Image (cartoon, rainbow, N blue to C red; front, side, top):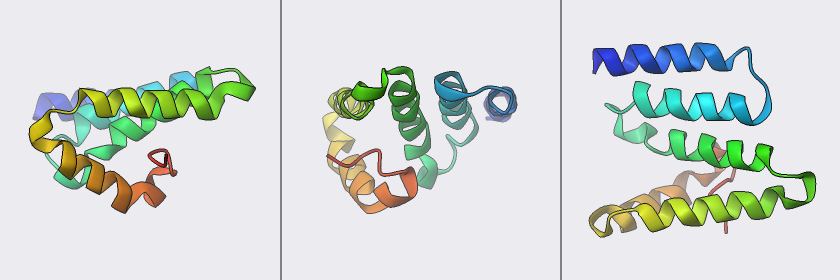
Length: 102
């Protein structure tokens, strides 16, 4: 975990100098690595990935691209935890920039 947290910290640090989609992608990587030991932070990487996809899409397509990414992520969830993650997304959508809203 110490190595993962260090790598996550480096990704988060690199994100500071970036803008747009690359910044959000770096934050997603950093979140995935740095907070794996904290169950309450499991949505951060997914939310940042959705923000990266939105930022990379053309202006008129950003919302649709974000929804498509969110659906793709949900399709990847193992059945054993799917309900838990979807409930958590509904409960904490507001603090995750509303990226999980349908």
